[in-house]
Length: 460
Image 1 (tube, rainbow, N blue to C red):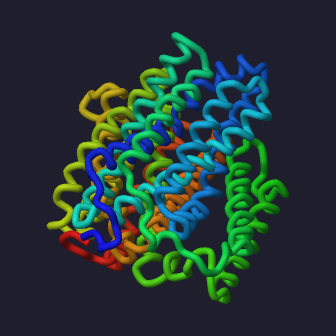
Image 2: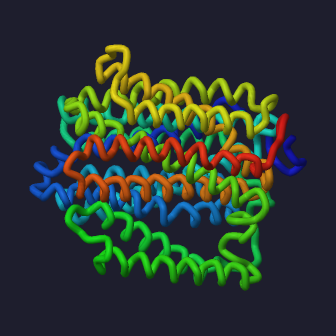
C-alpha cells in the first residue's frame, strides 16, 4: 500500500518506462562486443585498445553501483533515475561522435556510470509505488535482461552490415530521450521521505570501496592474460591492494556512525547469504553461459554465427521460466525455486561438459543444454531478487545495487579464472568442459546454503 504522502502512480506506463530503461542498458552490455572489429578498423587502433571499451564499461559500472544505490536512498529514486538516463544518453551520443579511442574509453566509463544508476533507482521506484504488486514487478526485471542480451548481438550485426559501428551508440539517443519524457510524465516526484538530510556522503568509505573494486577487477583481468604467471606483480599487487582496501572498508563501516553501506546489508542475518547466492547461482552461472560460444568454437569448431545463436536458446528459456516463477513465487516461497533452479543449472553444466549423445549434432546438443541452463537461471532469478528486498524494502535501491554488484563480481571472477586456464591449455575445448563439469558439482555442493535463505510466501 502507498503511504499517505505518496502520490498515486499509473503502474503500466511507469513500469513500461522502467522496463525500457533496463532494456536499453542490457542491450548496450552486449551490443558493443559484436562491433569490436569494425570499431578497431574505424578508429585505426589495436584490438587490445578496442577491447578496453568493454573493460572500461565494466569498471565504471561496478564502481558506480553502490554509489548510485546510496544516492537513490538519499536524494530520491526519480532524481537518480532521470540523471542516470540523461548521463547514459549523452555519453552514448558522444561515444558515437568521437574519433579517438582514448576518448571513447573514457566516455564508455561515463556511460557505465549512468547505466549503473538505472537498476537501483528503478527498483526503488517499484518498491515505493507499486504496493502489493511490487514483488511481481521486481521479479519481471529478470525477464528484461535476457531480452537485451539476446537482441544486442542481433542489432550489432545489423548496424555493422547496413551502417557502421557508431550506430550501436547513436541508437541509445532517441530511446534515452523517450525514456526521459516518459519518466517526467509517468513517474511521480520523489516522496518527502526520500529527500533526506543529515550526515553527508561517506567519502572515506566510498574511497575504500572504490579502490577495492578497481584493484580487484584489475587483478582478475590480468588473470586472463596469456603467458602471465600467477605470481606476477601485475596480479599480486592489485590483488593485495584489493584485500587491504576491502579490510579498511569493512573496518570503517563498522566504526562509522553513518557508513556508506550499512554492514548488515552486506553480511547481516539473511542479507549475507542472499548476496552469496546471487554471486554463486547468478554471477558465476552468467559467466559460464557467456563462455558457451567460445566453448562451441574451441571444442566443436563452430562459426561465430552458430555459436552466438546458442545464447538465444538460453535467453528464451530464461524469459519463459522467469515469467512463470514470477506468477507462482507467492505460493512456492524462495527456497523451492532455488533448489529447482540450482538442480537445472547443475544438470545443464554437467551435460554441457559431456559430448553429444543419441547421435545428436553438436549444435543441437549445445542448444539443448543452453536451454536447460536458461531454465535454471530463469527459475532462480525471481527468488534471489526478492529474498533480499523483502527483508528491508526501505533500502531497496542499495540492496538492488548490492545484488547487481554480487553478480558482476561473480561473473568477472569466473571469466577471468577460466580464461587463465584456457590460455595455458593445449586443448582449450576439453579444459573448458572440465570447468563446466567441476562447476556442476560445486553448485550441488552449495545447496546447504539455500536452507539459510530467508523464506517468505505471499506479497511483501
